[in-house]
Length: 56
Image (cartoon, rainbow, N blue to C red; front, top):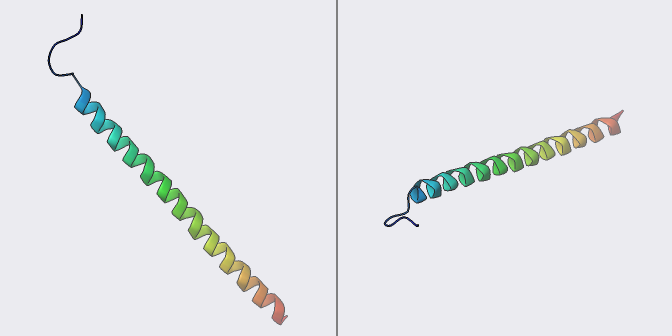
């Protein structure tokens, strides 16, 4: 027999899912930002190496 009235825990589950999704999205964006920063640093260091290598 099904329960009558308001469904139990539905609001809490929805909030929990929302928070977990927020956390996942935050981690993804931080990971992407890290990758982009590393790419920039690597490209800058390569440019510096090329410039210093040309002079010698």
